[in-house]
Length: 92
Image (tube, rainbow, N blue to C red; front, side):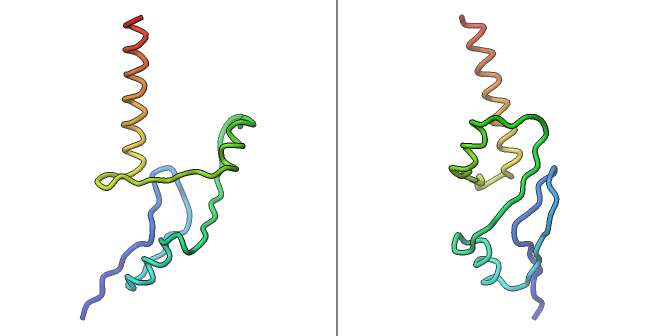
């Protein structure tokens, strides 16, 4: 019986880190669950405001769209927001 190798999680285009591989589906599900605490280290470029730090202290919600990668969805959302702002400026 051939077992399939699967990644637990993923690394996005501008990220680096450890990628876990397994053939155990239960283990993969357990690691991805909210029952296991995860800690992330983030490096930023530029100045970080007190407001931004407070938002991070309160926690960051991470949601993944069902059909596309989060990074692509975020880029599309940011593009739509920019277009809406431009349109609002034109309408004024």
